[in-house]
Length: 554
Image (cartoon, rainbow, N blue to C red; front, side):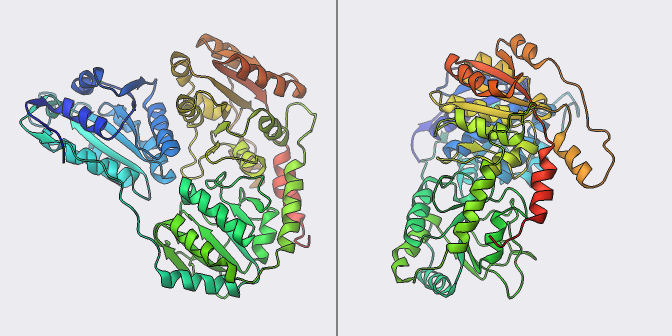
């Protein structure tokens, strides 16, 4: 423990505790129950980012955590302000993003307002966070903040919540201390488990490597690259594991954007061992285990959560990077495997990704949109995907070169997060090209944050793929044999809508204009909205009909 303070207001102590943790921003919509905290924040080094809705604040805080590994902080008042954090809390918790929510509450020692706006927010948050606690004594603030942030950032990262009642925030504390911030080192995997893994790898005829969401860490990326170079094993990834290793890598087999049936599943069906690195139960594995069939080595910070389709025969529990380094160090004892079939599958996957990349029809097809977005985005450019049918196409066809350049959500899979996520990326990396990619439905759920983006003077392009309906559900309605009913809506004039916020609106009227329009937006800087109608008729042809008839004899 370090510096001591006396006769300090509890809200001041709260802000100092957050400063001590290295907090840079607080995103939020304050209310009257936060006014002491807001006053304490006024002279702080922490920047307040005022948003237009608590969801936008929560999504920005979660994305800060996702991109930096440090906790993102957001602020709301009691009642409806706090309940608006429920979706971002679940988003961060399921997506393993470190985030701290601070909410206000009516006085807890004495109140003359009865039950007005009173909801038990702590109880509400407990099932969807790692930690939720009300501050009942201002002197405990340093320990509560330290514990909350420690848990939020600890593997597996997630959401935490602190409720600061109005009267506690205003009270004076006689004595308090700030805690030293330390980052604990995770233990490595046992040597015996490494030896067992090497025995399984040596016995396998056709091993594959699967990269999951938990592998998206800097040290793990380097360790994975060394392992792939040493082993020559082909790898594929889940949607949340996309980008950990470059999609242009010669051993990249593809992204498991579909649960089954895509071309890369030909290789999975042929494999006898999957080395599963960073598996996260929020994404079901792109294979179903059966007793006596495919074997799996589970490499992760924590043990596997076993169910009917995932029961790994070996679990290497500990620091993932250290585990991979230990395996790589012994890999020269492994006889080379025959990967000829897997390379043929890889060639087919790459051909499928290229199919339709130059399709001239208008409205544009998903394949053409993905290909054209790839053309305008440099290696370090970041796309932030909202949730809709286009997400599958980008997960499947968009090849990455650097980690965290495709921000998609295959955990909660909520709509409305694409724009705030892109805004956060733009704040962190103002020199890089950042693009939010949203359906018209998802965009309108938090479209008011366009004002926030303009006010913050961000450089950002927002691409809206317009089909005037909840397209993914409408497609599944069709595939399921249901009537086409109940999922269409109208839209505002998106160009005028963007202009009304002080952004710059554009409408794509011909396929050949797309790349030039995007380039001009990025060159001009500022906030741009580009509306492009999309033709989803390819969904069934490619993702169902063609894959259903494809043969695994490649």
